[in-house]
Image 1: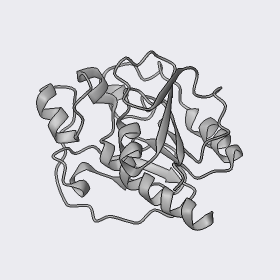
Image 2: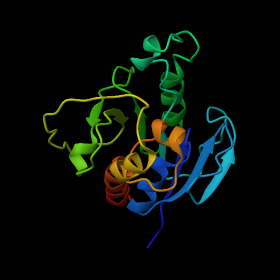
Image 3: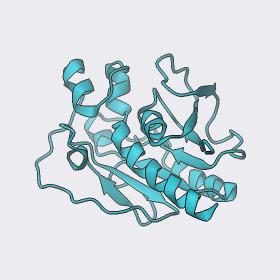
Image 4: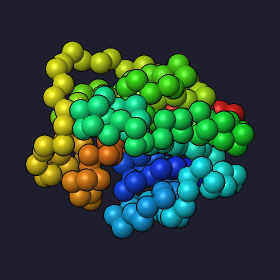
Length: 196
């Protein structure tokens, strides 16, 4: 059986990578910064917007979200972050001609996004993220809750809540739970197997 190859752009320490690995992908990560805790199969320190996309069966992208997050105005640095990486990423991944998912925060300009939350996967974390994909992803029921956000958390509690045991605190504050990427990755794999 073929092992599908996934590319994780803007991978950070690999929250999405771990989920894609759990789904069965061989994952190559790309990030502009060194990632000493990256958990994937291969890593390239490179500009994700300039990295060659061909040779992969699935592309995951998590462009910088700080231009869209509500926290930008709280911390007083709303003009410091790139605002339009999403449209550039979308144009690039469409050219690759393979299934893709783009992840970002609530409010980011994704096309026809769907939302995932940790509670949908039995995790003890409220981390709403929106996703755009070029294939159909099944919908999950979202339990009602109240959300308390911020960077004030105990690292061991956050690791357990998110299902991540290898990241440090700063990496955890930027990551998504691997369960999100595993869920989308499994559906991408099924889509690709039906098309093959």
